[in-house]
Image (cartoon, rainbow, N blue to C red; front, top):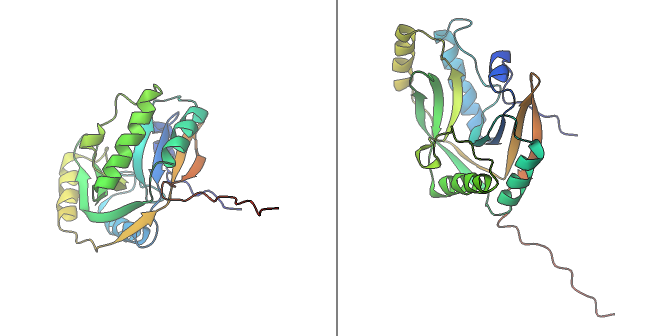
Amino acid sequence: MNVYRPFIDDPRDIARFDGRRYVVLRPNGALPDVHGRLRSLLEPHLARGDASFPAHAHVTLSGFPKGTPLESVRDVVAQWARSVDPLRLEIERAGYFPAPFQIVMLQIRKTTELAAAMASLRARAKQRGLDDEGSIPASDWIFHMSLAYCSSLRSPEWAVLTEFVDGVSVPAAHCVVGDVEIVAFDNGQEYSGGSFELSASVVPSVSVPDGN
């Protein structure tokens, strides 16, 4: 039996995401290692309480409005996943989102396939009336793996941190992810809403009569 590994474990972040559902990719291969090594480089630059960190690397494709029924999200994602091939994730560089977000991240290359997958997922959600009107449009989205959430960091300390990030060299790494996960937050906890294979290239098996 597989044990679910949550992406978020800081109570402050879990409370912030309460009632939300997200569709995410869980990187594999070298990507989590690069993510972990860079996080370890950041930690000495952040005093205790100044930041929180994701428990595991992840790439978010879409969010849903607070309180969206989980079964509705599953229906959308299950249909969408059958139309999408496995997705390649490639680290591009270290970077950050400025104030008021103040998030340090590893930017993921915006390939045609990744952008199309996000756009098609959000289009299906919109058709079902489940689009998140407050989200950044798919065309403007920067694919990334968050490293540290630093919104409470004061401006001078944030400036020092971003200067450090600008000088970080990140090794080339990529992976191919064959499924997506629904992440749900309710009642102070994160839990799995299901995992769905990206199966557009899967050829269905055909039963052939034996002639008897």
